[in-house]
Amino acid sequence: MSVNRRRVAIVGAGPIGMEAALAAAQRGYAVSVYEAGSVGEHWRRFSWVRLFTPFHLNASERGRTTLRRSGVALPPDAAILTAGETLRQYLEPLANLPELSGCVHERCRVGAIGREGIIKPQAIAATGDAARVGRPFVLRLEPETEPPRFASADIVIDASGTYATPCATGAGGLPAIGEEHLATRIERHLPDLLGSARSRYAGQRILLIGGGHSAATALVAFEELAAQGEPAAVSWVHPVPRATSADPFATIEGDTLPERHALTTRANRVAREAAWLTRYPGATVTRYESRGGSVRATVERPVGEAVALEASRVLALVGYRPDTVLTRELHVHHCYATEGPMGLASAVLAAASASPDAAGDCLKQTTHGAETLRTPEPGFFILGAKSYGRNPQFLMTLGHRQIDDVMSLVEADEAAARAPTAG
Image (cartoon, rainbow, N blue to C red; front, side, top):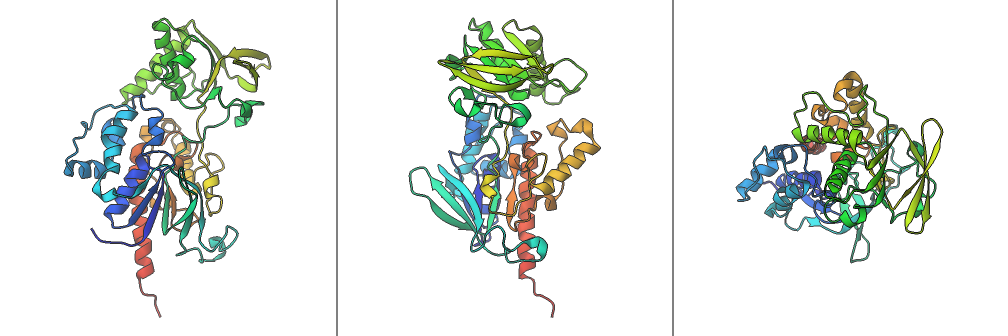
């Protein structure tokens, strides 16, 4: 392995962050990974959930090869694991590889990223100013047990994901009136309804909001609670299905992911048949009021009728968005529709427009070339789920390819910088 003294800072020690760290370390870069929690923090939050994709799609060939060479016994490539099993059997061993010894800084949040000696309005590349090239990045680190400090890097990869920044539940994606005052009553991540969260939900009145796979997973878990004699009374506010079918969850004909097909099929049956479930398709939550030990939510139906619902807890599974505050001092162009980086987002949107049937299936997503991963900020890249912004169709194998593409861009830029100039 060659030694490269250039410093690569990676924000986030999730699946893509750790894969990027290994790729950079094996190329000889000095790598630092900063993680606000612990390795795989976001995956820990839904560790009991069985993944749709087989193991080999969630682990890079580079990572599998390196771990096997180091003597780690890995699951079969076709194994369907939970998020927690993938974390324990793959991601944590990856973080413990000798190549990454001392590289991972857990419980060390990156609060903001800037450019050393320069502020945002200065050195704008579009005007021909190249003064940002070669200037170190500066990262404001906020460790849990130490005072904040600064760190420098030559290249920054933001792989912090989106799971830490949930979307709001009100009209037009805005917070409902009173939403900001109900932090302890609104749960915004999928809880383990049959395990650690059971006491909060079993036998309770619940307002469920959302229409994606997380909501489907919650409905199936609520069905299990009912079958075990502890039914919750669930009021479900969800989008109106776009397809011609009345089923709330889209199923893919000939779906090659059996777990996904089984989940949507079962959740649709629950939506049709469950006696403990009341549906409010197309409705919007406009207001929350705290009522002692419960919450009163005002829900407006599409016809304009308002309904008051009482619940002991709100489970808001309405999606997540990238934290754009992190890069406020950098030149990053965010997509008007997805909040992902514009270069990649425009390619993804164009592909979805050209092939609408593939737009809703993550398995049909493709990479769009290394150049789409560049941002206006030289040496700064957004990878992984955050690179797709609010588009939920990101697939882990896309992130693995992104890493290789970025490494090729960085090495090409370095080679160009070393090349002698004519004259």
